[in-house]
Image (cartoon, rainbow, N blue to C red; front, side, top):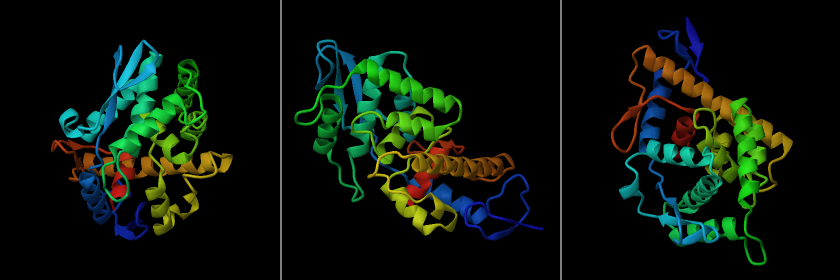
Length: 272
């Protein structure tokens, strides 16, 4: 008996009925995820003045480009951003969003580090561009709280739409980064690199969309939900293989080995 691999679509021997991914694909993904090394730049929130006011005269942020001294693993960064974004305190939620913006613009496809660009983008998010207005922390908190509720109902597409209501986060690429840090066990990033990947894999071609133009429309919400579901499906198959005794874990920067989440599948595809 054979089964069709959920990743490559090829026929494989069914020596592992618990999983529906072939060993070759599983090993390829594990290697790629272990090679993921996007710099873990971030911001910290504090009372009083810092690099940039978060809430005038009350809380500010400090930029941390020295990511290797601050985080020993990519999971550490995920936990950090998740803590801020899921906080009951508006200043921490706002700082979490600013941190995701800073992180997302810190490096580009060429691998060069651009601290100045990342700081400017975080400033635009908080203070507005020329002629813009400072962001309202209470509005931000309500939007993120609504996104959390949609994620609790396993609706990442609706959560994406909520986050896109915030200035500087109106496109799929950055809204999906926020949604993913809110719940990496359910969601995954969809950016320009992933958009290119969807052209290369037959199973993903129906998920093609422009993540940087056109906002978050109804069809894009649906495609994003299906993208998250796909990453969750592949993660589930990989974890089933691990439970059955396969060495399909991925290795983080600190050499710890981990089971799979949707975000890990996305990061493996980001690298490959």
